[in-house]
Image 1 (tube, rainbow, N blue to C red):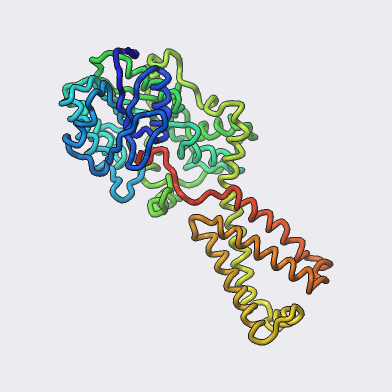
Image 2 (cartoon, rainbow, N blue to C red):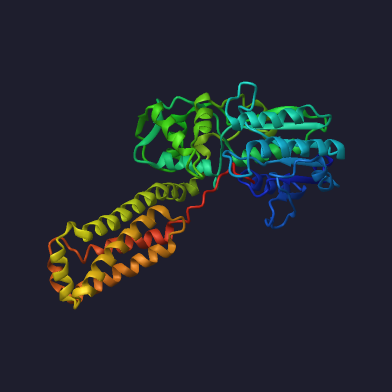
Length: 438
């Protein structure tokens, strides 16, 4: 017998950022957990069942999955719509069917992970869809708890990565004066609060704001994160809100971007509440922003955050080198002089023309590929091979270049190493969101 008499918990969204932490916390507390996952996914150490929130919208879809389930926890959600993963499907239709099936199956309690701001004053599509699902649950005749977290911070979360990257910039950009109020909670505190709720009275019918110990301004939040990473005091730059609105409009067209008009609107609106309920559940105050990054992880977190903005900068710089080189080779540099250099390595006539224009086109392809392709690992290898080939040819057939004051050969070395760095650290451009379809 486990705490509160519960034996089995169905956890939906068990592979998501929040769901993973809740799963570990439940298991540590002695609960048996059944993990609801997408087709083809599985969770080690947890009995898994496949669910499809984009299509499982009938009560009959859920009733067979609820046999023997005491508590159902819904940790599925998205911040951005993508294909069949719509707000309506994932936040309203599937949860509605799940909640009604729980009522019919006699599940003792449903815990819904919603969001702070999902209330009658909500304007974003994210918040309004969450509210619709919450309202369905609140109207049913069973025990329920609607957990409403503010910003959730933790290692592996996309929003945490975004905020640490912003905090690690040499100049930290703020929307307006950065006075927007937030009250972030650490993901481990959120998971602990949810486990505590699983063990409370079966007569629960309440909403719980899951927030940090006090509201902070966005400026204070980023400054505290920077200090927690062991970086020098932040230097802020105020960016007009109009520019943020423009960036948000562009972000809606960029796959995987966290900033869009909805998320910006939620930030501007503010996200604060009393911490009393989560404090009572934890038996202590939730950790403050200053403690979000553990001291032993501060250097690694700072390095990861700085690489996150330095690597794209380096990637663009390398792309510019290739593109400009290709353009110059196509005729900006005197073609006759290019042919003269090629003649010294034994290429004349048609062979020289093919080498000159073929290499120029290849340079352009390399540069554009860096900017366009999602998986660039093969491209980095090809570029390193070409640089090595060019360097050997020049060193053997044009040895005077070793003594050139602009170092055309020796400068290939840092370029080669820069590309090697990108090869080792530049992950395929596949977005992961901590609020993604889980």
